[in-house]
Image (cartoon, rainbow, N blue to C red):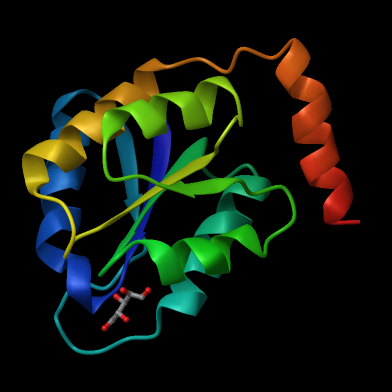
Length: 145
Ligand code: RB5
């Protein structure tokens, strides 16, 4: 898969760990995040990640900031984006099965790298179920206008 990864200064080390992990599994990773600990503003990175997915430049995305919250809020402002913050694999799995999430987000100051890898792997391996969930996802889309 082609996966865009974005992060702020709070998540540089974890971003590179996840990037290497995904590349070792054969994924193409587009890194648009901060690569140093110099302070940056997460809204622009979350927005750009969302826009790349909607434009078809990536299949899905991973966002990491201190908590995963700010950067996912930014991405969710882009029409067509369903970014979910997860701290464990169960929520990641269900966010794909039921909500058809197209971005997974987590906090570098919240979880460790092994948990982050498990979240990402679970999420990528899970398929959207569609069916009864599609009407609700359509209702989410309708809120965006
Ligand atoms: C940066 O200090 C921090 O606010 C940011 O990484 C994130 O946690 C915001 O939601």
